[in-house]
Image (cartoon, rainbow, N blue to C red):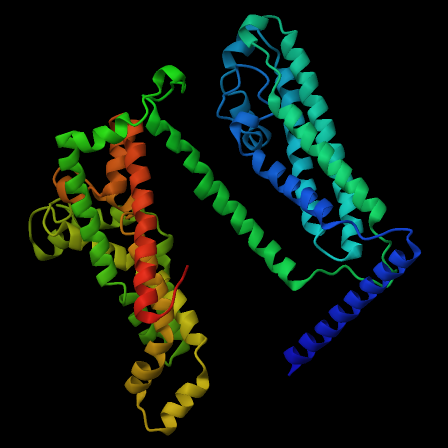
Length: 503
C-alpha cells in the first residue's frame, strides 16, 4: 500500500510539473518574447556531445599527439590518465636533451583539462534531457565544460609550440594534431547550440523542481553500461585491420605491408593449418557441448538450495559454492596440483602413484568438472532470483490441490524457471566457440595439449607464441562471425519452437 501511494503521489507531481511547464511555454509563445527551442538544436547538441565523448578513445584523433615521440596508438583518454604512457617513447629524448620534461608535463595537463571538459559537456547533454529547470542547469554545465575544453586545447597548443622550438627539432618532429581542429569545431557547435537554447528556453517557475521523465532516467541508467560495452567490446574490433597486413609486433601499418585477403586464403589453403583448426575445433565443440549438456546443474542446485529450510545452513552452502567463482584459475590449478600431483594428497593418502593431473586421460571431463565446481554456485544465483520472482499464490494453490514438495517443484518451480534457462541456453549456444583462455592455459602441458587446446588458447599460442598476429586475428574474426551466426540460428529455432525470442 505504501509503495502504491508513493507511486501515485509521484505520478501526480510529475503531471503537475508537466502542466506547469506547458503553461510557461504557452504564455511565452503568446507573448512572442521567447519560444521553445526547435528539436533540431537539441538533437545537434546531444549528437555532437556524444560524438565528442567517443572520439576521446580514437588514437588517430588525439589532440595530444603533437610529436613523433608519442605513440600513434595513444588516445586522448590514455594520454590524460597515464603520464607514463604519454612519455613511454621519450626517455631517450629526455636524457639527450632533445626536449624538456616540462613540455610533456604541460601537454599532460592540457590533455587532462581537455578530457574533463569533454566529460562535463557530455554530462550537460544528459542533464539537458530534463525539464526546464534541468535545461537551465545544463547551460551552466556546458559553459564550464567548454571553458575547460578551451583552456586544455590552448595548453596543448602551447606545448606544441615548445616542441617546435625544442633543442633538437629533427628528433622531436613536432606535428600539429588534426584532433585540435576537430575539437575546436565540435566545441564551437556545442557553444552555438547552448547559446541558442539559452535564448529560446523560458525561465522556469521558482516552484519547479529538477525532474526528468522516466524514459530518460532509464536511458541514463543504461548509458554507462552501453559506454563500457562500446569501449571493451566494440572498440577493440578496430584491431581487425591487422588481418589485412603483414604485421609483426612493433611494426607500423603501411601501404607496403598491406596484403589484402592473403591470410584469409592461407587459412584454408594450408593443409597443416586446416588440420590444426580441425583438432582445435573438435576440442572446443566437445568442451562446449559438455557444458551445454550440463547447463541444467546450476538450475537444479538453485532449486535444491531454496528447498533447504535452515537459513544458516543455506547461507553457508551458498557462500562456499559461490566463493570459487572469485578464485583465479591459477589458484585453482595450485589446489589441483596439491591434490592430484605425484606428491599430492591423493597419492599420499591412498598410496597410489602417478600424476593424475598432468596426464591426457579424460581431459575433457576433467576440465568440465573443474568448471562446474568453480561456477555452479555463481550460475545458480540467477535461478535463485528467478525462484524468488515466482508468484507465491501458485505454490499455495498447488498445496491446496494436494501437491507435495516434489510435485510443486516439478509443476511450479521448473516451469517458472524455464524462460530464464532458455535464455541462458541460447547464450551458451552463441558462445560455443568461446571457452575462455585462463582455465586451459594453466592446466595445459605437453602431455595433454592435444586434447586441451581450445580455439582461444590456439589463437593465443599462434599470436603471442608463434608471432603470427595477422593469422590469429583472422581466426578471431571468424570466431566472432560464427558466434553471431549461432546466436541468430539458436534464436530462430527458439522463435519457431517456443514462440519466444531474445533478440
